[in-house]
Image (tube, rainbow, N blue to C red; front, side):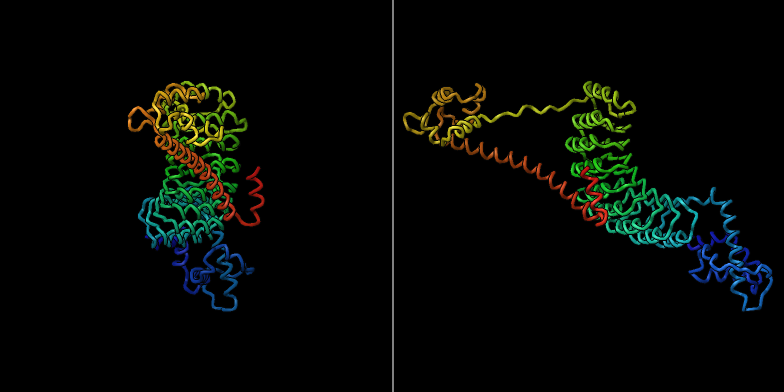
Length: 496
């Protein structure tokens, strides 16, 4: 049926009816034939270039003079254009502003015909090609059309099996297109490389207002790249990133977006593997954001701790415009409801969705100090070796002391150990359970303690380094995506 789309449009314009009723030698027949035979004449708007000044010649009678054919054909074409416009002025507002072709098993052959038609069409504003079989070739055909079309305002390409490489077509098309305001690319297969192209799209396009990227595979570097584009985008107001895999890395990148972006009003992060740590990162962005109105974080393992951090950030931010926070999988407690009540004193419009009562705040137990640390601190403070310490205890010089003598020696040296901690240390050092502690056992205890301390410190440094790397990666990607002439302004606004 797709080869007939252009014919259907012509029938609607009554072109063929005029053609079939005309004498083959008439100017009307020649005008229509000329229009359809040459690609550069297909767009009716071009027919106004050569207007005919002769109003005396009939447009329906046969004409044999070749000298006046061109101006008369132009005159007829102009008359037909006026009929065309009048016809569509009556019809398009109710019939052909929208083209709904969702779930029609359209493949590359069909989409090429549709793209050709939309390249010429100047009335259709809403296009829905969701859940078809466009794939890579279809993406290219559609994007080539978008570079030429200047009337489409809403396009839906959800569920068309687009891959990472196909995102480049959309990035190139929307670097040129300036009329589409709503773009739906949900339910596709964009991931790492696709995220980078989409980030470039967000940098170069400043007319999109609604972008739907839900149900893709955006994560890691792909998620960071999308955030990099958002950081400098000045048009997107509504963004759906739900059902991706942003995780805490993506949450960290989104924190920078919330700090810099001054347009985003709606953000959906449902089911993105964001944990309590990621929620606390987002809270730092909410603490300074003044534009976001709706934030959806349901189906994430935020925990009550993370949710309270978000709410506290909103409470402390007097310029916050947040109206709705969705954490509908989180159970809350009385302390949370009290915080919510206090927050609504400053933000009375705030609507919060939660699962119900029964939540609890996970309090980290006070970090238990390794009893061996007390001995190590004693050695460092007095600049002693472990051998010197043990020799002062081992009066007989046998490199072995009884548990009673060891306990008494530590008490006499005023090493700050509670009774329970002291007994724990003794149990740990007396490996062979013979009632004595020899030097080798004490030395092994010290080695174990130092190894554990180094591991804890390394883990702490890794977390810090990971956050620094994410910030560095975000900054690098933003810098690479932003044109050189815009970098200064973007970086300046980011610092502010």
